[in-house]
Each structure stands twice: as structure tokens, then as C-alpha cells.
Length: 182
Image (tube, rainbow, N blue to C red; front, side, top):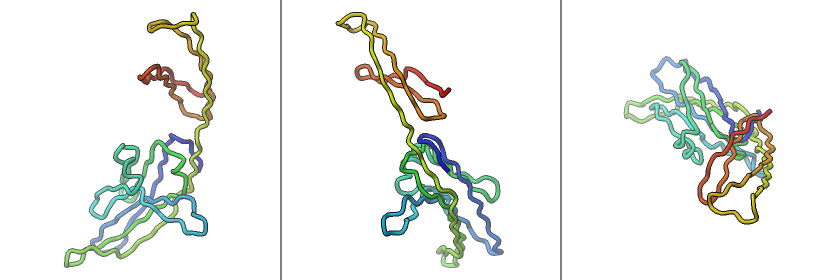
């Protein structure tokens, strides 16, 4: 699956138990990036629902969860969905789902009694290529605060999404336009 930078990734995982015992499920979405030379790929946790229903994001994904760019939700009785927004090139890799079944011992400790991991998708995040050129026409060789200047921009973007253009005259950023693909 190939997505563009800034798009969102939605993955769904089905997890259920058929055990007669009273057990708890944990479901975790993981990520493994490109394999290091001569090494094995390491699966990093992206986000998961723990056996006590707590939601936690792992490693570098914790900040994105805090910024609400990453979430996990239970859909129905057996499905869990991860949504990772504003994809970045470093999100390229294989995404996994790991389901664990837990039982509580009489002493209060938790024991993992079954676990299964499946690969959900190989994701490639392409960088949006932007070419921007600007030319300014000035009414005179000298321009003063409050004078008007015309700025013409030519923007070329490889995207199916809207592109926001910002100019920073002085110290302030101002969104000047939104460009939509043809």
C-alpha cells in the first residue's frame, strides 16, 4: 500500500477468544521499519489496548498519540482499528497486529496464555514533491511599510490533497491560499 505524506493510515485487526475461562484480551498494533543490514527487523509498538482496557502508545509514537494524530478504537465485538494521521516518510514499513489472551492467577498476577501476531500491511509513504517559485513586482525601487507589493507564486505539487500556502512577511506566518489539485 502506497500513501502520500500527510495522508492517514487506517488498519483493522480482528481478535477474539474461544476459551471457556474468564480471560482478557490485549490487542497491539506494531511497526517494523526497513530491515537493518544483516539483522532482523524489530517490531516496535505503535499503539495498543491492554488487558485492563488502558490504551498506550509506544516509543516514538507516544507524542503522536498525545497530539491526537494516532488512535485505536474497538469496532464491534471483535475488531480493533488503528488510525495514524499525518503520515511521514519514516512511517514506511510493515504494520502488525498482536493479540494476547491473559488469565489472572489466584495470587493476582497475570499470565499470558496465548499470543498471535499477523502482518497487516506493507506501507510505503511517499514524500510530496513541492516546487515553489515566487516573483515580486514592486511599484517602485523603494518600498515602505504599508506599501503594496504584488507577489506571484507558481506551485507544482504531486498530491491529490489540498496544499496550504503560507507566506511569512516579517515575523508573522499567514495562510494566504489553499490550492486544490486539478
